[in-house]
Image (tube, rainbow, N blue to C red; front, side, top):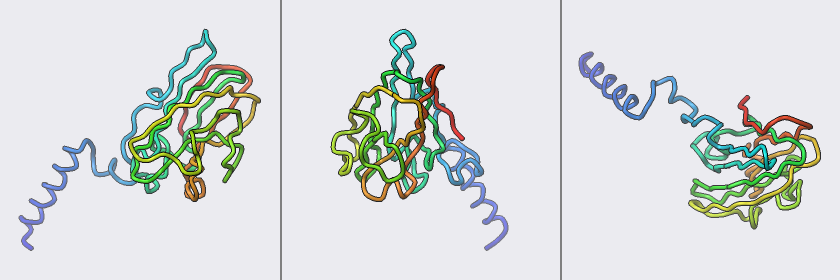
Length: 172
């Protein structure tokens, strides 16, 4: 292939990458994700927080992620005794669910009501549901997809219930 044809091909590839919203380096391994603040809404007076969890947000970890994060990289912090409302959405082609569990592989919720309906079967792509629970006691819990093999595949993040403060999301 002539050098001019190679250069033209490289130029076209770079143009396509730029049109898709990024540099070549930003496209390797991870899809762009919005600010974590867009997934949380806090009502301090009511001591309540709303959290959006999007299963299969991106192709990261073969789609086994919440909001583009997997294996505990997203940490949601909530004060003890706060009411938490979770909107769980499935953007993927396979069934997913959302559950707050005690540890790896758990399918039983750590708190009463802290799970999607039918969490072991999950919901189909394009579906969503909402659940509410009270975050207590203080401790570290797992935000997981209890559909068989998903937690083991890395589809989990972290919920920390702390003694005081305000709800937040951080990425590690």
